[in-house]
Image (tube, rainbow, N blue to C red; front, side, top):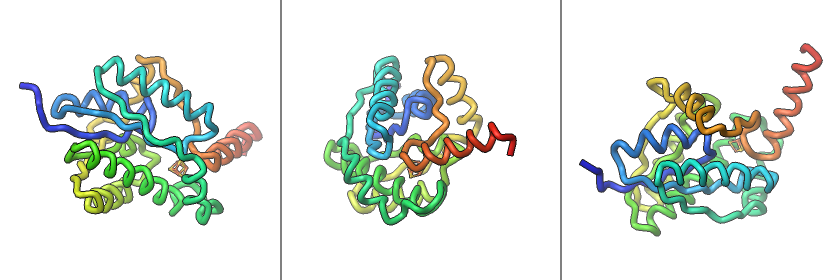
Length: 192
Ligand code: SF4
């Protein structure tokens, strides 16, 4: 029997979304929300958005496109700019996107929301849960506290990425993470 419970899923990129959206479709009436002003430069934002559109189209899932507020994101994150990946910088980045997803869920009358972020082993799950809960409370909607990387979820997302022919970027999304990835590449090229 088809589920009628609706869920709004924050889709961080197509690689993570490919598995999570299909998995959630087994239980929910799924809509996706691409709300990622952290993803920069703009060409990269458009590339990832295009791939999310492809995956949603394939799965028959409606996609809502969020505000392209790059400058607002940069301003909000500026106090944490000096911090590395997996620091307060990332926690605030999760918060900004989860709060906006919760707000959008409430606005569109969807009582439940979640995020594809937890499929990545590079994200801090405890922070995703705390920020998701707080965002839900703020906007009067429930956060689904799933850890999608479990039960082989991460491996399955890699497999599906290959199946769809998706880009697997070596940086998380913001310009800080792009610089960090460049540094990693340089260090590995020099054999350090
Ligand atoms: S590394 Fe990723 S999670 Fe952290 S601030 Fe940048 S885009 Fe956000």
